[in-house]
Every structure is written in structure tokens, then in C-alpha cells.
Length: 277
Image (cartoon, rainbow, N blue to C red; front, side, top):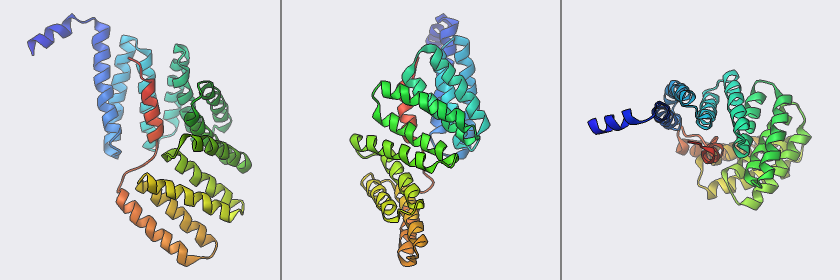
């Protein structure tokens, strides 16, 4: 309307730019959250537009937010090198602003991206700093998530004993927090690592607990993953009848899940608390 137009013209230029950035960011975020590949691809130019607007109006907090969200989306699209550079820019802004909680999240994401491109030593240094920040604020769930990420880096280096230790520490923290998607994922990862060491029954028990949590949470993605892994375990032990049963269950769970994905839900929901206007 004409009234709205007059009000908009009366606003300072930087504020109008921030409003345009917020509109573009919100549209990009909505597209990236649909989990459809074509929508994620469409979200990237909008994230870039939002970033440019926030740079114009000087909102460093929102610049960091957009850089992180765009990096997440690119990671889910299968890109590797570009997300790391964007995460670095975002974490530098968080550090400049003194936003330690948000920096801890950003450093963890940056470490995961670095691990994906083989920069594992750098990743471990970022994970270590992220752990210090998260422990400082007593966020056990966030600490557990970073330990889970640290285990990925140790696994990349072939240091399975350290990976297991990190996962066991993460699991201890998560048990105190209550059942969650993260706990089910850590149980499954730890079970797989322990099974590989020859502690077969212990590995199976951890996967069975992961499956139980997935059933209580009614999460078909997690149920499918846990039953498929249990099928592989029993196949490795020569129990093909039980393996086929688990694989059939996995097929039903994945069919129920459709094309949905359970990844990153914890990380994205955690990041929502670090937004800045």
C-alpha cells in the first residue's frame, strides 16, 4: 500500500537493507529446510543475496548466521571445499563479536567440514576449542555432539581407540540428559566401532539400545539405520536368518520414512538460539 511505501522510505538506508536481508534469508532458510535437492539449490542465491544486504547494513551477527546456514546447506548438497571457507568467515565474525556460545557451534561445524576435506589436524584443534567453550557454559548436549564429531576425526586418522573413548564420553553425557536422536546416533556409532574390535555382543547390545530409543521416538530413519546395521552384524556372524529379518525390517522403516532425513536436526535447532538481529 502507499502508506507502507511512505513508512519504508522514511526508514534509514541501513535498516531497509537489513529488512531486505532478513526477507531473503527467511526465504532461503525455508527452502533449505524442505530437504528437497532442488529447493536447497534455489536457496543458495537467496543466502548470497541476504549476506550482501547484511554486509551493507553492517549486521555482523546476521552475516555470521547466514554464512553458517549456507554452509550447512552446501554440505547437505554434497559440496566440501566451499563450506569450509564460509564456516571460517562465520566463526571469525563470531569471535570478533565475542559470541562464545555461537562460536562453539561454528567451530564444531568448521571441524566437520575440515575433516571432510582431509584437514584433520586443524579439525581436531577446532573441536578442542569448541569443547572448552561448550564446557564453560555447561551445555552437556552440545559437548556430546562435539565429542561425536571428534570421534569422526579420530576415525579418519585410524585412531579407533580414541574414537571409541570420545563416543563413550559423549554417551555418558547424553545418558544424563535423557533419550534423544543424538543419543541414538552415538549408541549406533559406538556399537559399530566396538563390534569391529571383536566385542560382538557388546556392539549388538549398543545397537539394540539405539533401536529401542528410535522406536520410543518413533523415528523411522533411525529405526531403519539401526535394523540395517544389526542385519550386517548378524550376517558377519553367519546368522543369515536373523540378518534377513533385520534387513526386511529396515526396508519397511525406510519405506515409512520416504525421502526424509534425520541428519542435522539437533545442530540446526541449537543454532536457532544464536541468532542476532
